[in-house]
Length: 297
Length: 271
Image (cartoon, rainbow over all chains, first blue to last red; front, side, top):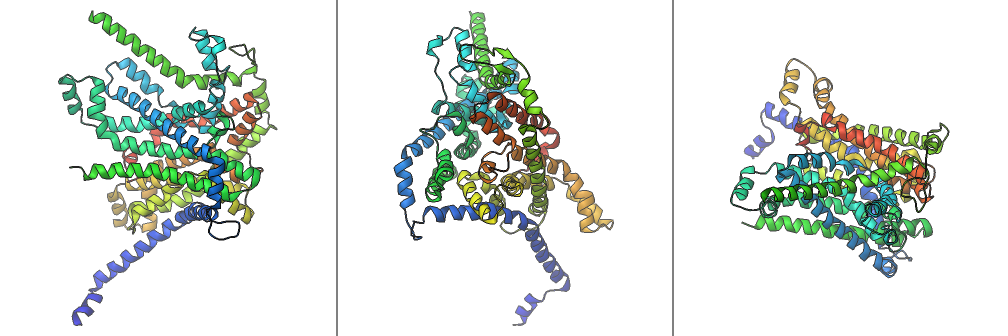
């Protein structure tokens, strides 16, 4: 027991240090607590609220009725949302790889310089401003069709409005590509140039060096950027509301409609849970890729 | 032969670059055209009459736009104050103090940005309605602050982590108290990063639409809501001018961000 007593009563110096480190930990928790409280009050609490509301029936017990109604009314929009977001992410990835690849491996300094100066512009443009731009640009008589007609690429009668699912995808790709390309170009720039040069010297084309040597090394960065873009696209309300017509539309618009027109929180929250599940799907794909990579030799 | 090939390559590159530039600048050009178009209808490819009538309407001191701009800036300033008041202590704790489950805390601040937010906001609006702060500036500021907290906390933590510890130790050695060391050494050295995080939060608040749409209506009309109302009401000119006003801070920010956010701080963000 004497040993134990020694353990609990160390020398005065160590004792003081232990008290200090304890108080430092308390101080740290005290400093971080207000920020955590705000997130808890305005994110975690509403999140629980939405889950409870989605799974509660009209008789206050557990029920899947809201999900039944959500699927009955909005299964088309659920599919529409998934198709839009997945297609937008795929096209964003393609465009970002093309831009970042040109920036890294391009040999024409004039081309690379112009591209570098241009591609970042939409990065800080708010979604709602992008939506307003596209609303005019992609319209039947918008600047895009007018330019094509003026260049002789199209007859005036062939002009169609792109303000539907295509408009949403174009707006998302336009807005998110700079973000993904910026992260990707940063990752590509920090790669070992010698490997890439070696590939070039062995006769591989630049496209092949990009796809087979460079991209696999920066895949984690690309995937993180795409998962973040995926969740962002699932959260944006202004673009589907302003760019496309009413039917079919994305789940964000449906949720707003259930609330504003009917005050129907149960169905809106059921749709909300479905959007959580869609984004969880993207996160799981990302994590599985990460684990597969770690377990590989 | 190779000269022809290289000429072909160069012209292909030029065509691709021109297409890219058109896709990038075209939508913005259309916005700018609408802002000065007094009349523009179907068969005409360009506005029929140009003028600044709508600019005068928007910038009239008693107009809706000026009131919305004032509301937007006021909300953004309050959001920065709230976010910095929370994130400077939190960032210091995350960067310098022993904190259990530190990475979990970092993720908690990321959560509001990592979830589809519409479902969260409709429930925040419901809770705020019960508290009687729906449709108030306070409610909108709280929502914007929670949304921007990930930037301010992460960047503040990176800025504090990038401060040289030896300078703090030197101050302590010559007799400064911990509090004095923080306010005269640590905070001034971390200030550029903290300011950058404040600018981030300011812009996020200025551009925020979804949260304000659910929590602020109908009393609080920020610029993005004015843009939305003008656009859905068919007034393309006012919508375009409002959009251009919203672009100004974003563009300025992009041009000057590198001054505030130094590479050594940037490298530590999220770490």
